[in-house]
Length: 107
Length: 120
Image (cartoon, rainbow over all chains, first blue to last red; front, side):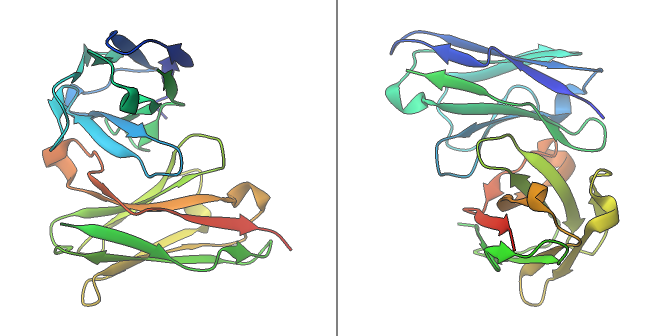
């Protein structure tokens, strides 16, 4: 099983700042199969990024993804108050499909 | 706009079988994979398994012995059965759609989730 370790656990930033979230895999992940989600309290996760760097439909361009091999990151440029949420990475380069444990972003 | 809606009992007794259904509206089930994902209160996400619209399945090995996912495309719905439940199976259960290889197995549409508690 591919274990995804996200860091930091919590990120506290101010509006307008840049957030960089890390997702490290226990083995190489094909960049095609790495995704990021945003989850707000009481809501289902929302797809932000797929294929490491492709934004999902309707996602603002302040969200961007990058990475390869075992190290991936999600960057949120120009934080908005509504970006307060927990962010999860997901891989399906190998079965079973797994998620990271999440990074909470506080603004 | 595709919408998914979970339904089923919110309370299940230990050792019994948890049964949930996800109704898909606003789109066809064809050519997509349909997942069940759960989230214990205050914790992270765990993939349970998926079913292809034509019936092929793939389950998380950690749950495989207890899980059955089925699909009924004529009713635009798919279902989850999880047997021999314990308190550890208490969670919010989500159904979700995955376009598959085209989107890198990401899940682009999700249901709102249903809280299932296992308790006597």
